[in-house]
Image (cartoon, rainbow, N blue to C red; front, side, top):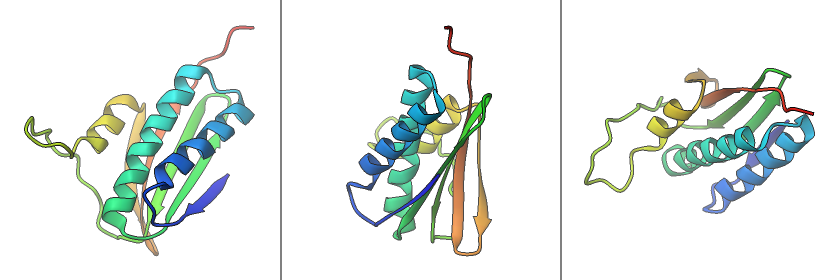
Amino acid sequence: MSLVLPLDPGTAAEARHFVRRHAHVHGLDHQTEETAELLTSELVTNAVIHGRSSVSVTVSATPTQCLVEVGDDNPRLPLVLEPDEQSLNGRGLAIVCGLADACGTYPHADGKVVWFQLHLTAVPC
């Protein structure tokens, strides 16, 4: 499932709702759903601030993993920064890398994609 969102401050909230709806369709457990929403919010916020373009969000899931990809039109790949205790920002990618089971970036024809993957655990019946 994919969604294209405008360059707008409310884009992160709309992306979280999109991920939540997709999580319910695929039966993700509550903890994985919340983590996916948080990490999506971080990536979409970065895309809005640094990408300065519309933002694409793609979510796919299998029985064992959930993959979220966030794209924008800025070809500059992001860097994970060492958190500065005095700074109010600059921690988004560090949060994503710390909570995701895998994450990364890749260039595409119109810019870049930043992605994360979460491994799914079986929900007890």
